[in-house]
Length: 454
Image (cartoon, rainbow, N blue to C red):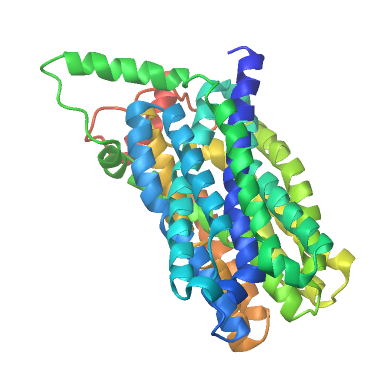
């Protein structure tokens, strides 16, 4: 593919994922800052924060469902159609949150409606990630797949930057009373504008050539009356790729947990334990997210040179080792130390997050790739990212110390190291290769693309 069309596809994936993550993170930041007061006002502040993080976790609970539904139809109908749908769902739900009446207006219906909209957000995001990274992975040239596929991954820090930036600007410009009464709605309503831009770009790109080829082959097989009916992608994934799904889930543990501890829980920890202002904590996350955005493509390119596994392992080990210094730096209360703590944490996180897109794409055959990559990634997030701020907040409330929280992240890092060490290196895989016939087991399936390339 000529670079111009590849760049357009990268841009479409990046802008879409940025908008979706903006919506998702905006909710997380608002949960930490205002939702406890607006939607759960009857409880004491820490319980209110726990409850608002609980609605935050609900978004993760819906992600596996999104992964299953979008994965199934994305493997059947194509990547592009499903990406357009995920963007519409996510944007619509976020815009609606901006219009929600609060507890003061409609009582307990307010947190219920908030939770429903959060479920829709999670459902959409569960389907978004797999499609966005596959569209790029399947268009890109194999030698630089790690680099190109890492660009949709920068949508997470870009969305974080956008969400934190807008919130930061509003908290700086508005009084606390104005922010609490109407200011918090502005960033949610802005999402409507972003979605229109994202849709315009998404609709202009082509379906992946690898998928078109696989679809044509499947249609040809269907025409052959003697051929057995093609199984649902989810069935094929669980039959032939169950090990790869487990590896992907294990690989996400440290990546996902560390990310939410470093970016969401820090807003609670820095303001309550270290006595730092809300604005200062947000600014530190903002600066670190900009660095995070910049390093992801570099880590992706490195994974093309030395392999997905070594880069991923560097990140997992690094994050585990960084946790005690991370909290020690925050405890000093100094702004410079806060920036250093979050920035180093996110740079190490990037070493896991950048190669993840290519790594997970390369584990699965084309007609089950959307399902396989999505299921592996999103089922893990329910056990990892969803409860991470909750667990960290609860540990802080129980022990009044950061030590158990650091140990929690270290345990996740150990899990990830074991999972990635057990995986096969995938960087030379041919994404157009077809998996072997059923019944030959996961090992055989994993090796197939190598054989096809040879």
